[in-house]
Image: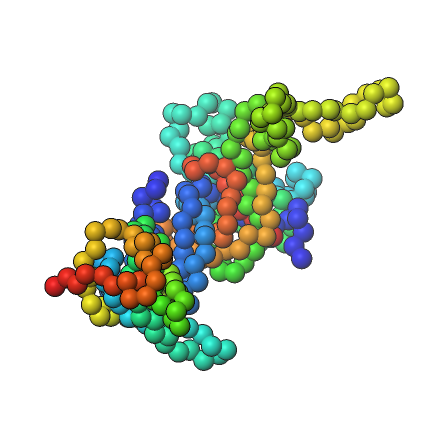
Length: 115
Length: 212
């Protein structure tokens, strides 16, 4: 019976979904509606969390804007998500980088590089 | 507005479960999937013959050997294939349905509002906290009135418990209708109907969908 739901969720998966890992620095391009105009919003930062839940897969990007930490969460399979560019691969030992929230200054965004 | 007694669109189905659907604008809606294998119209009741106008709908396949003789005889009388569930829907006299006609999901289109009837999940004998959302007593400080019912009324006046007082008892396992649920979409090929929001009952339960 749940096969029907599995199939339904499979259909909604975006086959061109971008691949990246926690700790990577990425630039997210998402379509947003401003009044009646559509435009692409760019948000660059560090991936601090990927919640793997099939179609509902969610990832969070963190960056510091004017000294204030900003986090944005995106649905990986959303049709509004046009592109995710990996700027720098990172090497981290944790699945969730929430410890960065307590950090101030340069350390707050620094993650080891991965080749 | 459609007469409540006479919905012009109706259907029997099975609750499959809940999931999400994403539209092209990226809006995610929580949906309940209802599977509707074809509904067949077994017979039509008319005002002249039966005193009221109605359509008898059958749903689900069943082997003839599983039926008792009165039911087999009934299907023979109707000259119809045996079905698992027989249900009657009142319709207005100019309904236009025909005997033997099948109804599929395509009658419910996107953005249409529907009523969904199902049997709620049985909770057994439940206390007032669970059944009527009464507040709990203190759990500590020497209190013993953790989840008790409490007072059920005054003393000598009125000298009785008022009718309709909320008390412990059997909860759930009742027919309930949810009105004005929005249809998010359908899949005619697979016989699936997607309704926004939750629907009463467990997965696999019989569900009745009518136009609101």
